[in-house]
Length: 145
Image 1 (tube, rainbow, N blue to C red):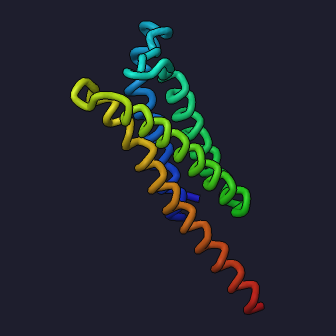
Image 2 (cartoon, rainbow, N blue to C red; image 1 turned 180 degrees about the vertical axis):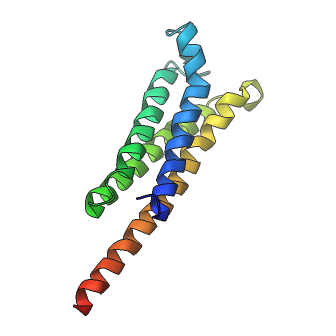
């Protein structure tokens, strides 16, 4: 399991999503769990960081589960694609939030949060490429028999 490169890529994606979600949200949620509503200027909607926290932990959980599905490559590929879709949705929500917020008033945590799904998407796509390479190798070995 650990000798496969996609396992390492998925582990890095898990660490990026899980650790960043905990570092950004974990301490604040521990002290004040209802302090996550931020108003977007020039808009009547409220942006909830609770959605992002849950989504990042969901992405981390999917990455962690995907590591242990190494014997079922088609299911592992499905979970990687699902993980990519969740990361893309998190990224679009963050871009919408940052687009409607003044950059000068943002904290470094909010700017750092923008890059979390991007790095997770990169490592998940690298793992997906490794899974496809393994499937191609298995199919070529089956043809030789």
